[in-house]
Amino acid sequence: MSPHPPPAREVTLWVAKSRALAAALTASVLMTALASVPVAAQGVTPAEPQDDPHSQMPMPASNMVMRAFGSVLWGATDRPEVPNSFTLGQLDLFMTSNLSERFSVLAEVVFEGSISTHVETDLERLQLTYRFNDYLNLGAGRYHTGIGYYNAAYHHGGFFETPIGRPRVFAFEDEGGVLPIHEVGIRANGIIPKTKSSLRYLVEVGNGRRWNFSGSQDAEVTPQVLDQNGTKATNVAISFRPDRWRGLEIGASFYRDIVTDAADRPVRHRIGDAYLAYRTSTVEVLAEWLRLTHDSELTGHQEDGASYVQLSKAWGRWRPYYRFDHLAIDPHTLFFFDAESATAHIGGLRVDFNDSVALKAQYERITRGRLRDGDSVGTQLVFVF
Image (cartoon, rainbow, N blue to C red; front, top):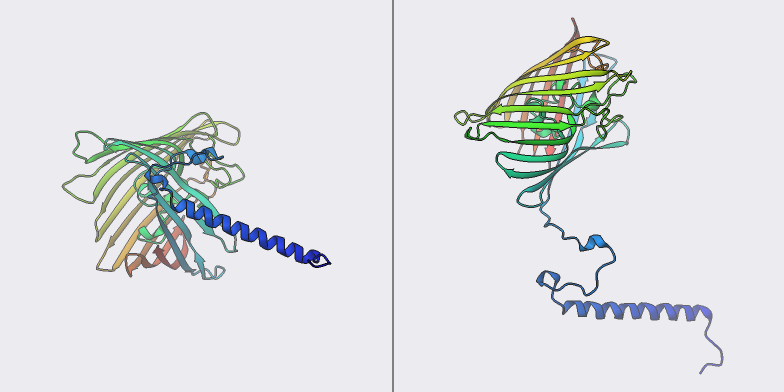
């Protein structure tokens, strides 16, 4: 034996190496033992329960499908004070999953990039659905309201829309839109019996609208998480899809709610919609008409209206299109402080390079009131992955 003890540093290194060797040997033994034990799927369960009670819950088989939609835009106007610019569109993550033969989940999360590096995240849809049969499906969560046709057919993925952007009346709430595009509540839909699948219904009950009163409505500042009053908003819709004319749909909806103004006075809010849609792989004809009414003790009866007509025809990958877009808003209408009347003629061309990438180029002439506001051009590259 050495007459002098080893330095403290050597002792520390020796202890560390010994612990590492022991850990490695222990891991090797455990891996060998586990390899000889049948897996849990074959009926063997751990002898002792885990500390986390959630680990004991049965987990459904994962069959989630997720798609992502993105876009890049460029736009310019004839107004010299507005420079032409490239911008990023929304990054839309769309997810669906079948939890069982009857339960399914739909979720949609959107990332929006502003002119800075800041990114805003919105949970646009989250809905759990239970399917009884073809005649009744029940859902709960956050969804796109079934007002008319466009809001139910087109969501946040701009890839599926023919032109750049939505009709003005169907603009999203955080973009100054005048409709309750999103809702939190419950809904039921299905086929009306004994109609040979041609007649369908939709019923929705939700929190309804909330406005801030700083001069504009903003769904981001006042989200539809809690109701503003005890009255729930309701929407009923019916649609006719004849088997004889595939691609044709005729329908109507009626939305009602009671909201409160800045002085906590009730305002009866109604939205009526009627539409005709004909869509095939080559032809698209959409026409929709809406009327919005407000009744209150302060302002009496007020009415606003909107309509659009959209036409397109595909020749292979090339699809020229046209949209007439009209929005008539009374400037004294309660809540619609940021909205203004406008009439636009939009023409453009969409080119689908493949099933995942498309390019849109369009021209727009817009008139606000009796004055022509100006012309604008834009392009949008849309893709799905």
